[in-house]
Image (cartoon, rainbow, N blue to C red):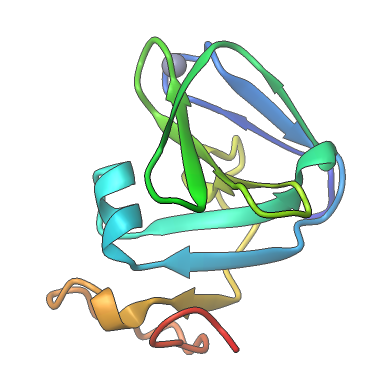
Length: 132
Ligand SMILES: [Zn+2]
């Protein structure tokens, strides 16, 4: 379970490869992420942007003042999220890993907005909002 990591969208048009370890790996339960990925949470690895190679066409749009989202232009898989504040980073969806277990989350964030029917019992730290 060491870099490089690789993955891609459902149709294969978008591919990514990370050449270094992520800065952090978190599951975000905020409403913004829920809607952006069309799922109950966004599990992502945050890399330095320079450590991620991307190929394929994506569509991007801002989902908040701080974050742009990127999806495959053909199949719509939500793959990346990019904070606009420096340093340049890129969040990559863990669900798009070729080896889905290659990177595991280290904490849950924004559980104050977690869907009520979702029970977390993995023992990882839970933060009501972002970690301090
Ligand atoms: Zn695709």
